[in-house]
Image 1: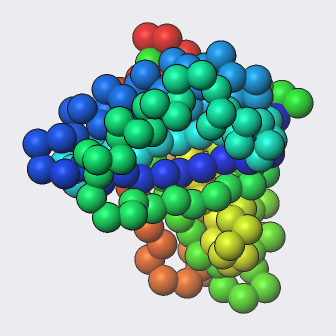
Image 2: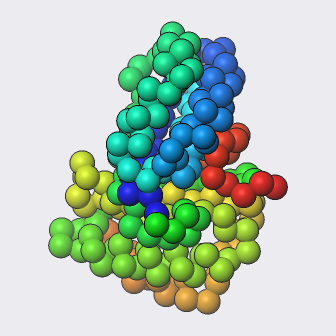
Length: 104
Length: 104
C-alpha cells in the first residue's frame, strides 16, 4: 500500500480552469505509467469553480519525486504555471489504511 | 469511474489522534463493503500531528449518503465527535479522470 499521498490544489486564472484540467489530465496519463504511482486523480470543486484538486498516492516519496523527472512532465509543469494564480495548497499525507489502494 | 469525492479533515483533541484514526479505520472497513464505495483511505499529516484526512471516492453522491445509514456507521460517528476539536474541513470533489479509480 502507498506510503505517501498528496492533496494538491491549483487555482486557475479566470478563464483558464479547463486548460489547467487538460494539462493535469495529461500529467495523470504520464503518471499512470510511473513506477510507484498508485493513484492520481484530477478533480473539479463545485464550490470553487477556479480550483482543481489533485489526489495522489505513491508507493514512496522517492517514487513521487522521480516522477517529476519523467519525459514530458517538466514541459507540462512549464505549461501549467502561467495559468495559475497564487501558490495553491498542498497537504502531504501518510496513508494508514482503508479501501482502494493496492496492497503492499 | 467515481463521480463524487471528498477530502475531509478531522482535527483531534490533544492525545486523541490515535483513537480518531482507529475509529476512521473501522469506518473504512465498513465503507469498503458499501455499494458504490471506490476509495476510502485514512491519512495522517506529518506537518499537522493532530489532523487526520480522509480521501473518499464514490460512484455517486447518493451512494455516499446511503453509506452513512449503514449499520454501525452511526455508532462510529457518535464515538468520533467527542474526540474532535473545531469543525474540520471538507472539500467536495468532481473527479474528471486520472489513474487508480475503477472504470465506470
